[in-house]
Image 1: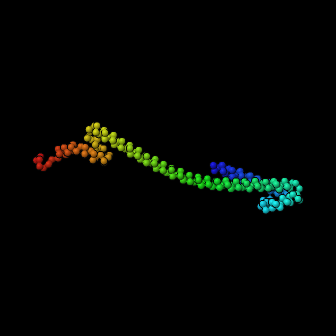
Image 2: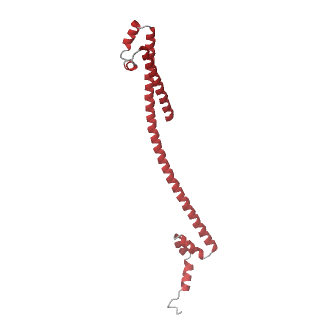
Image 3: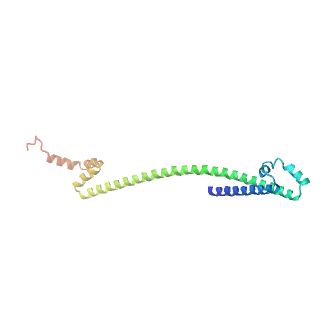
Length: 182
């Protein structure tokens, strides 16, 4: 959209330049300077019309009419250039706002991706822990609980609670107390 407006502005500026060239060419035919013609066109419009009708031949009237048309076209083109420049400024501001929103959304998306990755890793660890716990329960192996206990400290409490009797028997049988006489 911005490129389209810039292209239109450029074309209008070229047309305005061509119109100025045409005004200068017409002014050179009459032997006068083009700048006063452009600047004083509004002030001396009535005066020139009276002089053209009474003192100048038909070619001067045609020339004055062409100069007037070109000047009017030039003003229209300049007004359009001003309007398009304003639209370009508004669009440039809007593009800046949208870029800020995109940056915010990108940052939020990166954070959510990071969170999702963390939760996937956490889920994987929890699945592994559950699988190991299930294997241990199914195998009845006493070595497996100790491996699990080393990897995940929270299982220590569960293991001790679930196997309270087993530890109690082993501890009593492996300990010699002074009162037993052994």
